[in-house]
Length: 493
Image (cartoon, rainbow, N blue to C red; front, side, top):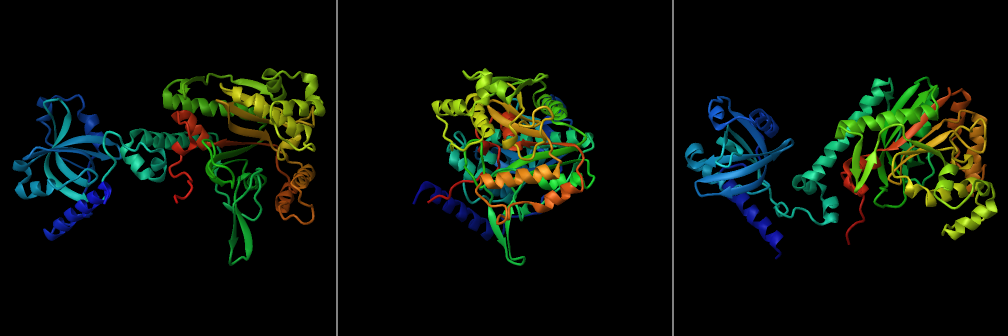
């Protein structure tokens, strides 16, 4: 029998002993009046002399994180949702019977305590306990105090343990929540409406990705988990809701990496009578607000790289970025044969039938994207890689679109929306042909969305921001799994 199993048996015996003594190890009748943070904040600067004048008793509850038994006195630390504080239990104050129960406490148990604050000889602010109650007896031991959860996979599989013993994991969680709150505040101030759109869709649209497929028994039809909410949000713009946003869960049946999880969180927002240029300014405002709120500065580090969010951020066209970070000259960017030769030279693999726009985009991703460390907007993407974007008035082979890159990663994607139903239908069909699907047989053409566009959509800009990657950036997390509470993992054998 391994050590873990032996400890579980020992704890199970303690539970049996408590029940034989008439003590319920899983009670639910203790009332909490204060959090650890309340006491630490209110009395952090008080001397023992001043603490002795405090008349109020405080009731706290939490999980035991450390315990030292000195025979007739016990020191322990309890942790609640706001922090951790020391408690001091003495037999002569709580009584022999209660003290005997206290001696059966273990790290991981939940207890309730009542008492007053004082300072120990080492000046640590502590609760002098005059009443204590066992609330929950833990059956399994927590990870060893000094090493915590060192195995990365265990941290992800048992996130509840990670959050208990690793303060940095809780800090990432709290920052994630704060970032989403800041986003909501920012958009609500600008009269955007938060909405909800279907997560199960009969046609997965709004992005190019492989969907998860399911089947609805009652309706007798296939459904797909959404890869993006875009087409439904645009329907709402058509309906007259001129400013809408959704912080949504998307699902893509594709690879898993430090930057990709099959289930992820996306912010998408749309504004009528705005362009992609307006959204570059809006994106700067949003991300600089978050930086100031978190760091009180526009400069911070990510994985050892110093980032500067001071506006204005650099703006380059896709072609300018290719020229800047490769040996190619402007004239070559219009020559497909020479571009294919260069693409093969740098190790790209592609079909000989690849379009010029797709080829340019692949070369950009290879030579330029990794070098975009400081916030950089890349604009003027090829039309054939942007099926939902409005064509540029001066060059119809390009669209009014940008992507924001920070530390070599795409953080945001935005464009002036295509609202011409005829052009939109033809681009959808072209996309289906490129996938090898026929116009007549494919059920993946969203005819209802085309019909909605035929009723008229005002000129509109839309944007998507990956929340998980944004949180990675602002929490200095190396992997997307660090910022998702329960990341998807392969089953253990």
